[in-house]
Image (cartoon, rainbow, N blue to C red):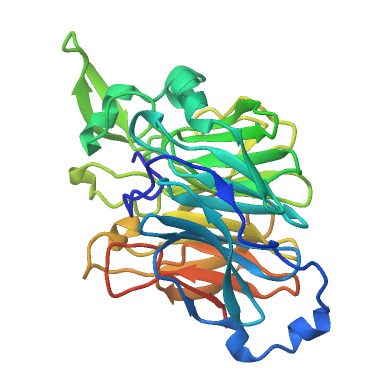
Length: 390
């Protein structure tokens, strides 16, 4: 699968300049007053456009990346009110959001065919700058095709209508520090590390899911210019990233399409990986395990977000019925689940089920769990909704 949630087919095009309409947020707010808010302060809040991510700001507000027609903005939910805090002059959608602290935020934008777009910005109290050209990195290095086990042949991109060659889509982002972001590149099948001075490297390459014999699952076969057969594997598609209190990096997969004979829908193939804090240029593989990248959880379906809770648990968000295909085809079984795990990968509890495409979560400063439902899923009567999970 080529694109972070090609579910929506809206994550391409270019990034422009970012400007803030006013001060991003006030930092001082009494926690007791937050706890005494009216129930209506916790939503639901509907948004008139595509939303891929939400994030918690240090003052307790919730950031929402809104893509409405040709308009791009970061919205803030605070004290029961929604306001626009940042306009983004871009034709490429806002993908991931990662607040860094008071008045600072990392923001990733969507990729495009042939990796022509996709960047990382750092915004600081009204000033912004593009700090890492993630698309240029993919065009030059394309790690899943050219590094490590080189498991992806770029000719395989053609099956879904993309140009054979490098593909990227910087989907979710996590702040490692004020100077370094960790990015889940869904179309690149990689986890990237990018700094504010423009340095980019691949932290990890994810490899395809495996069958019962431990072999990578083949989706289809194509041919090169000589007529030699080339296997095209089911792609892992990293769509979620979180950093634990011990510095370990947790990465979740959406998982790309299977072959028609295998049922198309990638049910039960998604995984969560745990990458050591000092790892770099590692390969996450079930067939060739690495001490730096541990398979933490498997048997999941279409993981779309991860978050570490205030009490140190790993919360995992899935499209658990019919996978992400349910977001494209009205009428087939659909649903979503949020589950919590300890950091060793043991299930603690199912937190919520039968949700409507729960595409992102965030914990506010007093521990409320916010959820984004109805990510742009191609069904016109559903709008992205953000609320506190009851």
